[in-house]
Image (tube, rainbow, N blue to C red; front, top):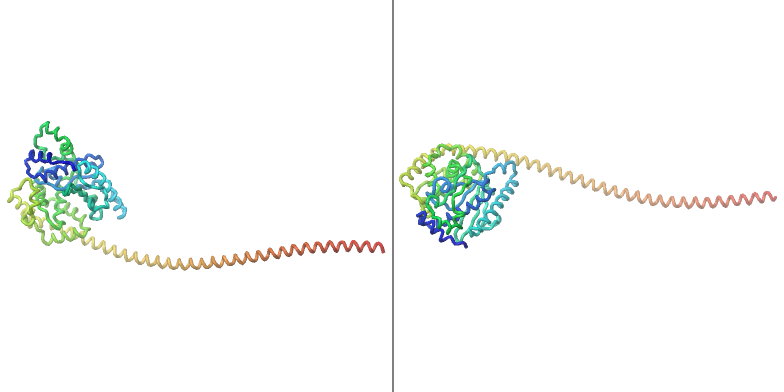
Length: 408
């Protein structure tokens, strides 16, 4: 196993963040991100998103992130495909990405196998639209989550992905000594989500997740501070939510959250979530942002239009399912008619088979007649030959009689 301890200690001292385990995970995740983004094909077809993107590409290290999130950019690839064709293409793309992750993880000393059939390393969700790659370092789990199918509403942005060291001075001799680690733990360009896209997906996560995470609310708080309010993107949020409502677990969670979305800071402030915070937000400001402008009253008020749109979608889905059921009933009738035709066809084939058997017997009789006929012709031929002999004898007798008459 590759030893990161010395470099992690260096990063801890330089950044002043006394959280070595989280710093080590950040080093691993960032280096993995660098290795993936170094691949030309990956770089142009996957979008960096989520909390890691907010931290590394937009707001800096206000909190630590524990995974990497991406979305597949070329959504037109799935258009016009049947369900089975699309699933086959999704799995194929997941396999290609797994192979790239395997190569990158090998260089980082992480345990991972590009085996999409092994749920220890690769797990599919939402009808193969979501893929989670699980990498291991000892007992530590690192996740890479990829949405292969997604509704993209805003243009991607080219952003710099930064590290804990981007704003600190690193001496020349330190760069030389830690060259092997700094090669991947450095600033580089990635294709990333627009902040508005992240906002919409963060709200979707809160509304469709069964258990709320404090980190998501912190991210919303930071987005609010950056001037992005939920009320300005209700339509876009609704479009994002519509995509996942076809899956039962999201529908059930969204219904539960609609009845009573629990945004209590106290209920979500577990030790793990709090340990991710680098900058502790001002408590009053945080509460005001989440419980006021983003809290129960205004948040749910702002989202009421979204829920109404969702209900419209559900009613539309219900009508669609009724139409589908009607088509299925019609299909059953058609299949019954086809079965009746097949039975009739089977009878016809039985009759044809009987006629063929009868025809075969007739041909056998004809062959027998031909054989009898041949025998008759043989007998006629023999009779003709005997007749010829008799005529020869008659001729000889006549000649003999003529001679006798002449003598008389």
